[in-house]
Length: 204
View (cartoon, rainbow, N blue to C red):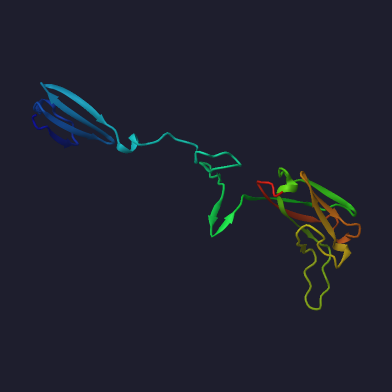
């Protein structure tokens, strides 16, 4: 078999000067074309980039073959959202989510109702924390907290020492209930913030 001679050039190929059995590979920007002369005929071949040959079909996500939303496996979407069955990085994270609310407290002996949006809330909510502005502050021996400071707490009676600052929080499968006690004059009609932490599985 005769040896095939290949020449790589960047200028246009001159077919008339080519000998039979000679191949010229010509580069035009991103295009690479080989020309082979045989029996005074010219044959051409356009090459394709190796990266293009291996390029996979564009997908909106990647994930495991056993992925089932909210149940098993893992998935990462192109929009940055991801779901994993379990993550271990010095500590384990077990599908903990949270949601925040703000509002104004109710009148004395009344309540504010908020739909929390957590499925099976009684079985999945692990913590409700409500902070509420108080009209007064404790009188201490030294400096006092400024009037209008938030009373911070975890949802039950926030300040048993002074009945004027008492409010309570309950929740069920559907709602949060933030109650102003009948004596809670200092927390009536005031701004509150609320954080709800919940899991994506039933605790009991």
